[in-house]
Length: 87
Image (cartoon, rainbow, N blue to C red; front, side, top):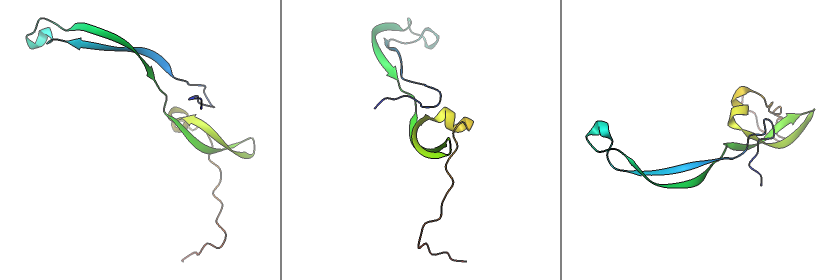
């Protein structure tokens, strides 16, 4: 499964995880020293949802940024058959 937003194309990005030891100078130490650097991945917050695309209801993978921006239209809610309505 690809971790890619179907709307904006956002995908995982890479960066470094830096390990430090020591006490900061402003706290009375001699300063922080880097003891190791490792690679890491920053994963986008991808959600599976049903969306209304070109007049059809389709399952898509969308990042939360596109959801908040309103770039995806949710399908209309259809009432269930044999549903009991209490008025």
